[in-house]
Image 1 (cartoon, one colour):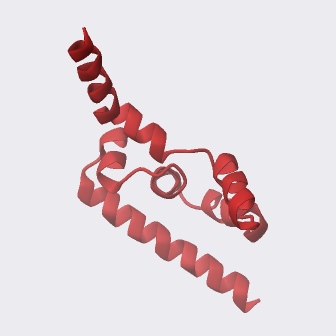
Image 2: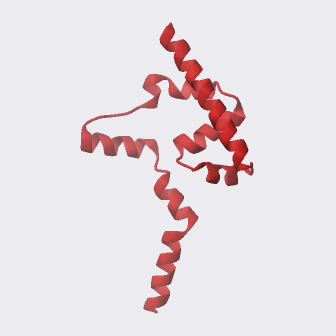
Image 3: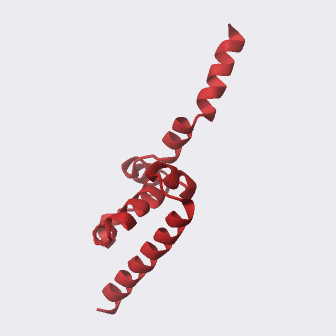
Length: 109
């Protein structure tokens, strides 16, 4: 029985769901953890990041949300969206370039 319990525990820890749960902590929990330990806080709303991401096309916004806000790798995002990995890489690069342009236009004004 001990071996069965041990094997099930190992299977759970190695499972994709468990790995994603540990990667994809909500930003609120992360911010309070950082605040408790380092006395700093981070709120993407204060720099208008969410508004900038929301201005992106849906295909780019989905990828940015998965990769940067939810912590998925590019290959995991490709699996989740059923899109080839090369397409994910191209769209994420394009989305980052568009976000840079938005930041530049905000900073230059």
